[in-house]
Image 1 (tube, one colour):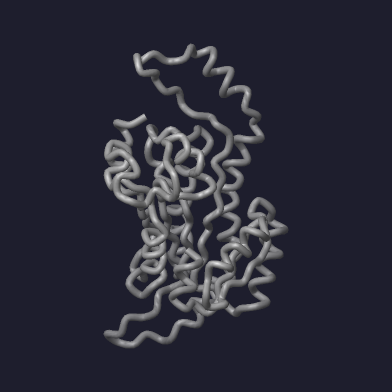
Image 2: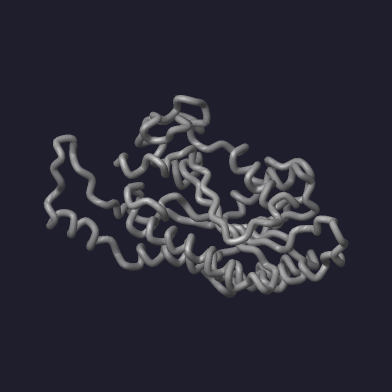
Length: 275
């Protein structure tokens, strides 16, 4: 996302994250010197307030806010049948799931839902300031887009049979609904809220899925995945996500509000038949 915005010569891009090394790694992959790193933990209101003040000290407004943080959480998968169709004993399933501390379940919700919610709230004044900068309308001239929030959800929030985790899937379903609620709440303020629901993209979070499937590299070439798992037969690429972000941020995306955009190579279409 950062690389796409930087390549399109956005004047300033603030990237927030807990890990300084990860922020610097992102900056090293950009070319126009527009990226400004700010350490921030979105599960802390104090940290978000500090980040907001740091951004506000360096710009008068924010046109686009992307809430992209997320964690997978503990392995709390629904039971899957063996090749012969048998299931594990319910007592075994109960022990495996009940032994996961509540704190670990709550951490997933805290980052994926609560953290996204408070991130949006923290930056509302700068989003409002962007709208106030818009020029007066002219007849038959397309106006610049209003301020926008993009929240990253997941296809796991739609399908009961994308077997990631009870905590993760539930959090992403909540995140998807949060996009709808926020788009309604802020519609009359001229702040748009949209969501992206990715399928399998190469990332730290998805690495274990790639390994379990015996996948090497980013898996962006055709044939990397079986068609029964992903009809496009590959994982998502940087270009897939970059084009989506640039479009949403452009004049062409200015009429989009309250939408959840799936980018999954068709996986959600076949997920009900796949374990």
